[in-house]
Image (cartoon, rainbow, N blue to C red):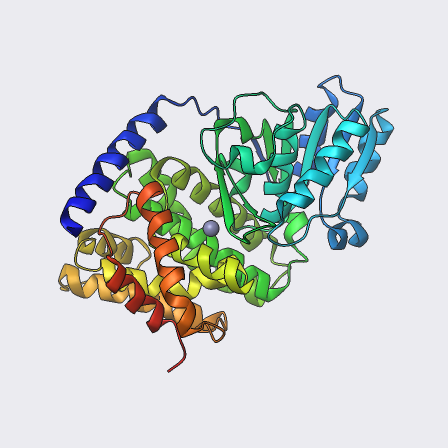
Length: 402
Ligand SMILES: [Zn+2]
């Protein structure tokens, strides 16, 4: 029975691969380097617009991260409307508030500034501000027809890669489910990877977001939809993150490490946009939605378990990753190299003081969580090896403290 289901999922993924190839995916204009955020503002100023809606969160706004940007826009006679109500894991209600603000003020452009939550919120506010639709109407794959307001994004963390992806995750206010929206209509026109905006990021957020980017790159590299281009992006991201994440964690103001991680996160985003994700994200999304835990942290905890499950099916790929990040692979079998890579991930987790288990995970919740994770993975992700419900529940049990 499971064999027949797997055949069905594989056919579905073949169809998805063709669809993704057919979808036009214009790449955003990407500025990089110190003060590149101001170059992005120059690009916005040249768009002949009157009113910009800045979508961000209260903390960033109060810290003054947006000040220089607002000032430059105002100097060029562009009115700035601030929507700073974005919270972690924003709900559809917050998106509705932002849409109303954009409509009531006749905004003609949206600029998202912040971490993944603010960027995802900005994407949805921009695309829905020109329609009467809600997030619930457009959740899923390729359900958006209308062209939204022009969108620009400025990441202040290096993790989600949201600045270059055609995906956004919004939490349903009714069911608390994570609603995944995938559409080329939410790709921004431009973005800037400005390490200056990332210098103040606390160590724990550096660790969580860095592990999110690492998971994007690894899942893209192991995906059945990986190609030469996505491999190159993913490998570069994995090498940069393994080297630079411990440095940025220890020295938050190290601008070179911040810049490297910003580029890595962007590359990981470009890789998974085409190659897709896997079980780590499918499982992590359910845990995050149920217990309100940071996405990067849950990814970090789940990642070694899924890699261990994939070890035989993805042995060659994991061995390649061990070599790529400079582990001592001389005279070792592929299986031994794959083990080395998984050990390295666990060591990185410990270096960054990330928990190894999900302490709030309840045994009574596992059945529902596992079913939801399999539903997400099997309809969206080209995984290298399929988990059945029993295996998935066992994996969830391994995440609990012993
Ligand atoms: Zn992620």
